[in-house]
Every structure is written in C-alpha cells, then in structure tokens.
Amino acid sequence: MFGMYRLFLALLVVFFHLGGLLSAGTYAVFGFYILSGYLMTLIMQSSYGYNVSGIVKYSVNRFLRIFPLYWVSILLTLVLIILAGEEFTSSYHLAMSLPETVADIFRNVFLFFPFREVPRLTPPAWALTVEIFFYILIGLGLSKNKKITCYWFILSLAYHVIALIYDFGWAHRYFTIFAASLPFATGAMIFHYKAGLLNKFNKLNFTSKYLPYLGYTLLIFNWAVGLKTGLADSYFFYSNYLICSLFLLVLIEQKNIAGISQKLDSKLGDFSYPIYLLHYQAGIIAIMMASGVGVELERGSFVLVAWSLPVLFCISWLVNQFVEKYVQKARTRIKAATKRTNPIS
Image (cartoon, rainbow, N blue to C red):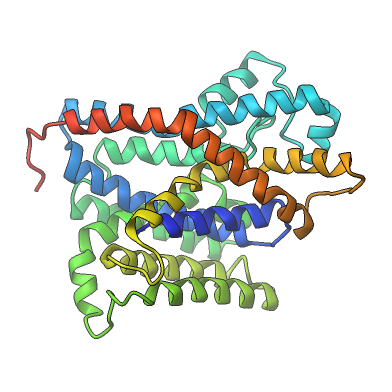
C-alpha cells in the first residue's frame, strides 16, 4: 500500500516548489529515496535475480519506468518555451531555458545532472539522476545480501556524521549522491531486516487500518515544528528521515487503510511520478490561464497551487492514459518473462 504515500510525497514537492512551503519538498525527496532503496532491493531479490539476464531485464524495466514520461515532460517544456517565450520560462525558473550546447542537449535527453546543471527542461530532474545512479548500483548487487548492505549503510551514515561535524553545509547533506546514499541504504536495510524489526514492534498493531494516518500526521507535525524552530535543515531533517523509515515498515505490513482500497491506493500512486515531473509545467499553464482572465499569479503562492493542481491532475491523467499505460504493458511483459535461474541467499 505505497500508492497514497507516493502521491503524498509528490504533493509535498508541489507545495514546496509552487507554493513556497519551505523544506516540504526536501523532506519528501528523502522519503522517496528510502522507498526506492527498499523497492529496488525487493524486486532484484524477488523478481529478477543477479544473473546477467535478470540484470538486463531489470535495467530495461527501470529505463522504461523513468525515461518515457521524462521525455514527455521535457517536450512539454519546449512547447511552453515556444508559446510563452524563453524570457518568461527562465524568469519563472532559471533552469527552464533552451539547451545551447551539445553537452546541454545530452544532459537533458539522458538525465545527467549530478551537480544540478542548467538548463534543465524539467527542473526536478537532478533527483532522477541520483535515482538512476542507485538503481544501477543496486542492480549490480550493492544490496544483494545483509553483509554488503550493512557496510553500505555504515559508510553512508558515517558520511552524514562527518558532514555535520565539519559543517559541510546543507547542499552536501541533501543534493549530492553521497548524501542520498543514506536513505537508499536505509531502504535496503529495511528489506533485509524487516522481519526482525517488525518483531521488535510486535506490541504495536502495525496492521491497524488507521495507523498510516498517524504516520502522515507525524510527518506533517515534524515538518511544522522544524520550520517553526528554524531547525528544519538539521535536527528535524533527520527526524523526518527516521519517521519515513518507520512509516515504510508500517506500509510494508499494511493490507488495508481506512477509506482507501488497494485498487484506489494503486490508482493514487499512478499520479505520483507524472505529478513530480510535470508540476512546474502545470504552474506555467496555470499562470497563462489566469492571465487570460486578468489574474496575476507567481511562484511561491498557495493561489498558484490552487490553480495548478487541477491542471496538473488533468495532464497527469492524460499522460497515464496515453503514454504510461502502454509503457506499463511493456514493463509487465518484461517482468513476466523473467525467470530466476540463480536463487538469492
């Protein structure tokens, strides 16, 4: 039951980027990373395996998951640059300008933004570069067993401790691949140790259909207190990481959520990736629509979010219906054709 959670995280990113809800998006990204670390380890262990055939099919499947919708998002940005003008789009977001060099084109087509290079036709794409990096390492066996995963986790944790002690700065604790290693490793650790971890919490009713709502409440409360105290980028950033880790354990065991069926949960989750990719573009469309009726909007306003969300959900639905549905069929065929030949210990 991860669908509602993924949509929740994606909407936090929207409120951060379009509504100016400080730190909400950064908290959400680490939540996504933890979930990805868990899910990528899960599918490698249970669906693909670490033989050559399994790794190839896993790689193709990950490519289909990331790139087709991403390419749709950059095409939409190009259309908006033509319609609204590059001066407007780049003032809306500095990264949303036309690539001028071969290197710029390469980075935008193949999602290579290790240092948040500009232009980025889809501004949040830097985080996808991080995701792809760890998809590759996990596919090659970085979380193949408990021993390797433990070493990975310890090194990743040590990086954050050193970054705090020597005050590397916020960018080095959030944007870099080294920083992202900790949540990915945590997700992998949860996969390998979930049985023991759940046993330690056996006095809690992890299957309560109301418990996920407590998780959402804790995430919002932690964010609000961090913002209020001015410690959102330090103590409460890491308490958010811990809450996301615990919440993942809750959702692993969850079969039912009050008011949310498994089918609805899945459909809600289908919106998370297009919403993440397309919210900046939806904001531009909302600004253009509002301007047509004499309403001036700008980024950093909840009013822009209110105008953008209907546009964003409509675009996301269209993308899911006319692009992702067919991509998903191909991914399902690849996964179904995968036969494990080497059991994973």
